[in-house]
Length: 333
Ligand code: HEC
Ligand SMILES: [Cu+2]
Image (tube, rainbow, N blue to C red):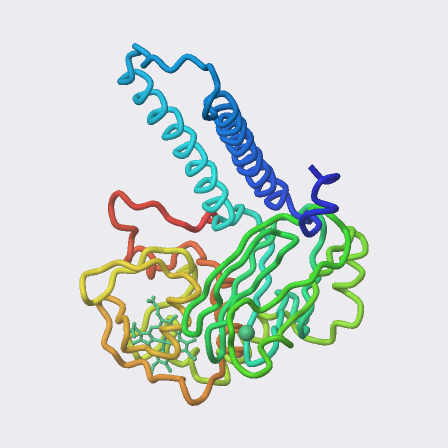
């Protein structure tokens, strides 16, 4: 399909993009086929049955019921097929591969901040290695933005107060543009950037060169100590607070009787809006950090909490087994 895309659509730079284009060209082919068929029939009838022509005009004696059933069911099946195809692609773009690399993206008026697990941070640029599944975890610091990656055939609204994700596997080395696709204020049109897809060895080099930061998880660990989190979330603490080892991806029972998955949004809200969801069996003692931590620091804390593995013998998880019939979303034991 690449020979076609080169001229009509932006370059395909991910496996997903290639699949989306197959769907797009199939739709185009079906539409062109129908246009040709209808144009042919109209032209044929206009000429054949023009005034004064000697065409046979006696009514046909055919079973119109059969005909109508056919032209209802056949296009119906084609449309349902196209719908299923599109839905499958959509769902695939939403699911991350079990072993994908994570990159965090923080949107703000009017720039994109990218943060890598190794601590590197950039503006309006996203470096990725070719051939590895990537999960972008994104949130906004202010208004609604939307990350639009034409070469990946992907677009996702980036909302304040919530983490959203996009998953894809780049399969072409090069530089591809991305945009903000949701009007977000005066300089919305300046909110553009570049995805730079690199060969694995170049990417390794890029990762290690010039990175003076500690890993994102380490930065979070430092905040965890400095902000006094460790004082409560600690096995010997005098405050009855849940241990955070291994909570990421678990099903957490809440005071209200509901269950939530401990994903990025849950951890974020636990820190900034602790009263929103109280873990079952605990008092709402946790202070809010809304005025003390910004979204970027919370990102580091999330990465730190995700990196905390639960060591055997932790009673924390025994207190909170997964409810029956649910599966842990966390592939790592
Ligand atoms: C005063 C003690 C205290 C401090 C300080 C504290 N927490 Fe908490 N935290 C709690 C308690 C109690 C709960 C359980 C009740 C609830 O869900 O709010 C909790 C719940 C949580 C949860 C949800 C955990 C779960 O298992 O559902 C997370 C995540 C969390 N805290 C992270 C933090 C972080 C990060 C900090 C520091 C920025 C912090 N806490 C500071 C007491 C504290
Ligand atoms: Cu924007």
